[in-house]
Length: 280
Image (cartoon, rainbow, N blue to C red):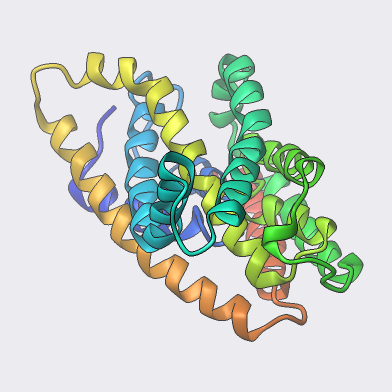
């Protein structure tokens, strides 16, 4: 896979933002290079590992941003200590439960999903679907009935299945998990926090899954290894700033907070599809 330095930076910035904003990072990673005519073959064996390195940067950024949560989880689970050990253990295991469906389905459908990744038209269509889901979720969202600490096992599993929608390029992981959180009775802020907490183990799991390919293709170093490392760093910085901005947004906007992202997904997906059909 041939890729220029400036393309790495652009892709990394886009990934770092779109992984956390409810607008689908994979959808953008599939659509944009094709529309812009970049010499990037998304069915190349090095493409998915390259994406995983960018996702790893995002996971590290989330770990740093929510370090207090993960520190409290560790203290509660390992040492039974902390300000609220029982509540922290409960939340930790709910986060783990919510990751199980996506891990299982992601591993089982890996080869199929890899082929889908190379189809920009499909990603465009599902990006529009993502916008419809976000728009509808705001209008069907119930009033918040519980806090994040009160999530049940069933709530966590259901949110985990919502997260599985993001295995389709164009559907946002953060958006789908937040919609699942709404359905469980959370408000925007708590739904966003739970979504970002579940993102960390999911992304690390994907990194472990792709690590053998990553090491194989980058054995001995070389330009691609350096490009991948740079991509991870840039994506991580962008992700840290994105999660900071999003948590502030959802804290201040409980009413129709998803609408700007919904309009963007529907408009961008439609425009990209027109370009794909008539101009590429």
